[in-house]
Image (cartoon, rainbow over the protein chains, first blue to last red):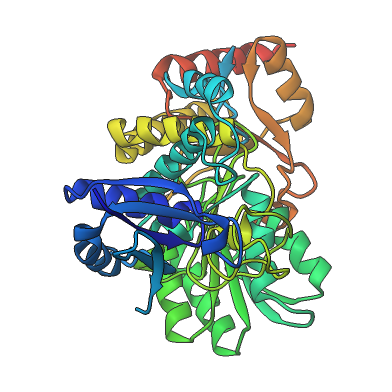
Amino acid sequence: MKHCMITFRSVTPAQRGEGLLRRAGLECNIHRTPRWMEEQGCGYCLRVRCQDVMPALELLRAQDVSFRKVYLRRENGKLEEVAL
Amino acid sequence: MIYLDSGATSFYKPPGVEQAVRCALETCANPGRGGHAAAMRAAQTVLRCRETAGKMFDCPTEQVVFTSNCTHSLNIAIGTLVKPGSRVVISGFEHNAVTRPLHALGAQVTVAGRTLFNWDNTLEEFEQALKKGATAAVFTHCSNVFGYILPVAEMAALCRQYQVPFIVDAAQSAGTLPVSLKKWGADFIAMPGHKGLLGPQGTGLLLCGCAPKPLLLGGTGSDSVNQEMPDFLPDRLEAGTLNVPGVAGLGAGLSYLQKVGIDRVHKRECAQAKRCAEGLQKLGMQVFTGEHQSGTVSFVPEGDCEELAQKLADRKIAVRAGLHCAPLAHESAGTLKTGTVRISYGYDAAPWQTGELISALERCKFF
């Protein structure tokens, strides 16, 4: 199963996002954001299935949960930031 | 002990609060500082409390900020809106938690509305003061000394009409009266966690309706490279490790209130305050009572108020006497010289407490 990442500035929006996605039936897990993904340091991210990324972002936007970046997994297996 | 000092803090906490504190001590690490289970449990505990408070006070979750007490919250709010020389309108019933920060900032303070239990006077004077132009207004929802419930919804509407940013001090009302950031359109609402909200001491909340200026600077577990404080809430105001056991207990207090209903708590407290005022009047005390009164009653005894409170303490009845950190309120009511004895009921208010108090006061008269 391929997973993608949605990053957040801090734990509060990440947790709110996690609750929102789970209530909508989208699988996700909260983690610390890998250091290389967050130049400002110390963020949290949600790991979601790649097919769920678009509905997840729609939900987050609709509920005003601010996220920072989205990383999609490319064919070569690497995560790459996508422009939003 | 018969505890009638809930205006200072709630003493007998509802079931669940102690357990929540203990559970947090046993299972929670530092929220927002790690990805391990104990850190995430702490973050969950904090988020649950933040969300519950947000729902209770009509405030978006991230705009609910944890502080160490109501004074801390008021200092942030006042420090954001008031600059040296700012003209600030306050009610005649403010606590030192409001007046001292204003004094320290060198604000030009206008006191508006000094007649107890009189909404017409409060609103008339308040509007007159706003009309003259003000940088900010700060007013209490309910006097900590006399239990006077101010017409905050109308005062908020006046502030909006005259475009004056405002702060509501909900120290004595949160948990017993409806408080709404959204309906009032307040810039800030400050409240303690340990009074009407039934949490442990060392907890407070600040509801933010505008961008605040941090009072405390430091680590937030976010945006770490940036040497400025984060520009987003709640992190902007939550530097340093949170009081997670306190927040857990506060969460349990809020859940209890949700179950019982604050309206029920308010009615219970008010019924006893009314009964108490009647009993005190029969004993010939000078009692401050009227319309728009909460579960708090103040009176001036024949002798010294502190000595009477001590006599009651000796009979295992806890009340508070003196100036209650609110000399301005006493000045308004004409009791600055004598002080008052304050009876303040809590969520567990019951007729037997009032009965015991009145009997004890009757006996005190003869000693």
